[in-house]
Image (tube, rainbow, N blue to C red):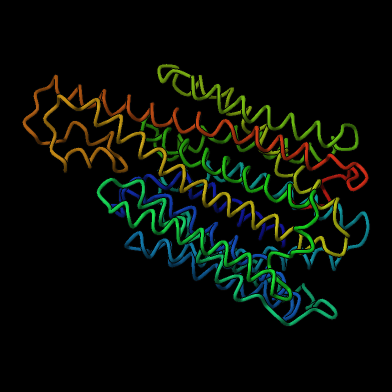
Length: 501
């Protein structure tokens, strides 16, 4: 049953990712606004997961699992019937909050129900199930979006949640953590959420040339101030979500920072790639899901296999190889000509997957190896917090970078074509490729073709430019990995099936 919970939560990102362009058309959202369909979920998850783990310890793991399931069902229903993007984003925030409640509660239930090797096997099973769910997500999301409706991507969660609740009530015994502190770091949660939200809003405003850029930079500056305040609050708070004792361990800190960067680059890549497949190559949601399936499958398989390789090879070597694969995949993909279409993208896709899959698992393993076993639950929550905070910021940065590069390229290429401002804005909205020929401006056929060519060339330039700007991040992760494993007395290789990747 816990495996079903992890499958739903892991699939929820990849299923929604391929549906974004279609739901953007239906809800009349700009391409830049689609980021909120992903990063609102990750923002809530990142801000709440550590505090939610403590809530589960205090008030009961089964109780929190059921509360999270109910909230997830309500949020999924809200997303499924949302008439506007704003209501969809609210639903996604609630889904992220529900996921933050269920993940630590589920992990604690498994840890409490099994001992020794059985516990390791159970947690390893969760890794495998999560990976399979991620790999199946694009196919399932693409099929539902193309053949039924994007709303079914959310509504399909309702019967699954019903099963979770029935099994939880009948089969799971309530458990609490002995001597768990009842103090919850509410100030830390609120400050972190406010800082992340302000940063994402600032990046969103910065990508739109029509908005006041003073407001954009003001929001980003406010976010930086809030992050400083968050750090100060955490230093003075008992049971802080950002535990100073753990953060002061160099290996664990490097693991958290590297997880942040890996989450940033992976979710950035996933977002712009799904948009590229649909806007540039003209795929529908189902075809885009099929195109992403090999990437997701390799990501899942290599993530699980990497845990077994830690008994044969040093963690440092495996992590550096993962970074090389990721950097190579991003670099190669950024130079693949658009004329090669999908076939030219398959090999770099597999390289990216072969870097990200092991990367997440190995960073968990290396970080948790540096701390006492009794702190592993809280430490895992912190690694998740950094990973999904990086993912939320990465999606927002992807949208901002892609939109800025696309706008600049489009303006340059259309400098001699008489398009109005409103017509140009149409080209920057989801589904623009389908509407180019419908632009009513008295253009002759030759000019319509010029507009189409300018759109496609600008989209390719924005896609490749965004990838090239982020090739440096895997290099930064590799440097952190070398720092992480510098002190060999503090870290020992441990199979990653002990941790949920």
